[in-house]
Image 1 (cartoon, one colour):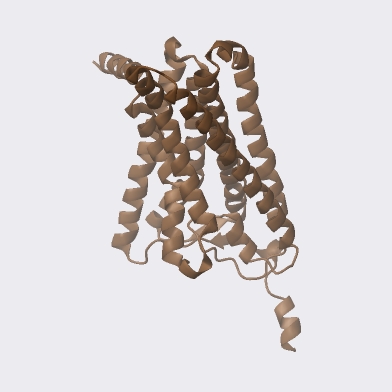
Image 2 (image 1 turned 90 degrees about the vertical axis):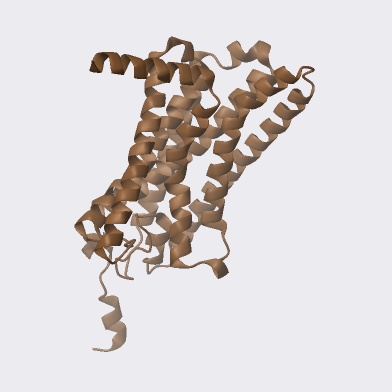
Length: 320
């Protein structure tokens, strides 16, 4: 046979039943260390976000737009970290790299879903802060319970539509460059590298569209904060200014973490790209924010801390 016909008989996507993920380590000790580290981070993320969910749901004082959006953020964070970490941990424990075709498709669908929805939600939270500080008299009308539910539903809905489009598009491409993924979970750019057709331009177009949306959200957040800081500077008392800053600071820190890690992950120049750096940046981008967000939000928040304290005290009483 000539080499040309042989190349066309390479496995196509219909014959791929599983993908091979990037292993963090090749020695048993390092695999177990990786498992232990990821397990610690994962449990911390579930605990932190779970406590925020419980506090907001159980304490009627926290039934306000700000905490309603925070509850949604906690749900998204739990979802996004649960999409990537458990499979990676199981693989380390079992000394394997395999993920089934369906498992890979699920990661490709769910991660963009949670991340897109989170991007939209952080934008809505900036709007919430803007209205609270710049238009306090209209807060009740602009952010009534129906408006809040609609905005949250729009964030989740847009995230889902975006993820479905990407997933359908990615898996409609024929794959002929093997099944090894250069990442510890399945992500779209890595699957595109396995594609042998030129139709990945379609997916590139979709990725650009998503990038534009993310950039639009970022600009909206920046403009909201410009207005907020202008309003803050007009507050005469230092105490008043301090109160507003402490109300906005957690959100600003979370947005900065989300945007900086995401941008570095996708926009870093190829010249500084190396498998180990790519892996480190992805961990920063996918693993760190969901684990750290609950800490950031509860650090300066008196009402949230009081609610958490009450819950823990009740749990201790029931335990005895």
